[in-house]
Image (cartoon, rainbow, N blue to C red):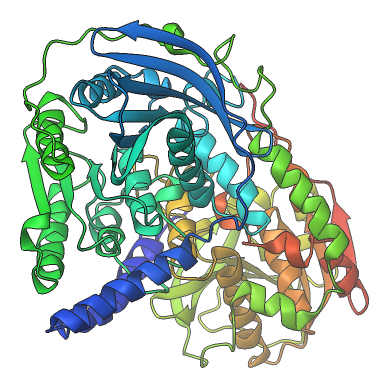
Length: 635
């Protein structure tokens, strides 16, 4: 596969981030007084509550204690509660001896498939309970007893991303779903135990560090916190080509102008410690940069000693040294005179901690994420207004086309038995739509040709393979084929990324496509819309060569791009859509599906679905739909 621009999206995203970051740093440097910093912190907290827009109503918890384990110094309650109606959260409460009121700690688990039963999480909960804290530790979505689809090859990160795509379609955020469980976990702890409301702590490791960071930025009840093995910088993750989980790349974060450590800024000046490891894949250099930034925040607020930093030897873990550092910090701020040194600990078997009979919330009657998405999608379908181009353009976030720029002439290539001329049509700073051209004579062109009608094929993944498929081959050699153009929009074909661990595998859930699409969400736009922009720029460029009418053909995501472009560009007078989704709701009921994150348009189902766009375009343009995209994944 010809792939000559594999770093296009990486370099573009880095430049875009750098521009945002320069503005952010300048604004922060300008803060010189306590009053100015306090105003900044207050604004940051308000913005975090917009980024993580929580449900407005809390449902009854319907807490059920299903068992109690008695042990030396504390007891373990096994329980379930509902964070949303019918949506069970499985949890354990480690309750110290005595009557209270107790200081307390909520522990959102990291990315462990056994959730709260992971050895280090058990040790952490027990260690805090032995020091006088009531501790709530719960299973996050798709972990522990809350695995929604028992498919052996899936891991929790994979399940998180697959669930996130479904939620994004109906305008919801997976990060909010995860954080809401944690907010309701504290509600449950307060309801169940005798809690001192002035001494509430929050600590989590890895993905639990993510949740700690989110929750501390939006829930005002916490008095002290400790994100572990998470806080670095978005810049380090990006330049290190490290994808994160969906909840770790929240939509609009860059649009608001924030870095990862601004979750902690929103918590200032309350006590916080950043627990880090010297050899973590979450870059420790970014963690140290975060601490330096936060130290200035806390110093200007008059609380320089309230922010602390720990970096101990080893890799990604909340191990004994990290836990002992945590005990010392939390006990000091809770007013407890307990020893920090951890005694030997023997973890319980996972099954002993089950809060449900079979160790699965779904078997105990819990709803799944997809049930809520399907319900909301049906509601949105009933509430949708008539489709308009203006509302669709706003959803795509494409605005006015950028100024026309000179195209580049690339070196010709020979593939599939044909000679192809190659061009790069600039669309944004550092982005170009990559265009191959073939004429009926088979001659090489070193300028874009002149003509009146042409066929344009829009790539899904790799046109080299796609145009040899029968439907695509027939469409590309139809009556308009005196001039045939192939358009690789950003992140496809010749600019398919090879970055991250997995590289150019478009269907790997946790890879380059996911990473760049998620970064687009963080900037407040989306890859779907940017690809439509790329195609519109190519059509405009070809019109300057005299072309007036186009038969536009696309496969999969390319079909969606072509269809969306036809809403705005009337020079597309014929469409052939090969294997599009029949509906965006096709993915909702599937535990595993082959549809990349770059093909997801946020909040799309509030405005329209694929059939609605087809109906709109059909009013002026002939459309042929050939087949449907095969979403199935074979195990």
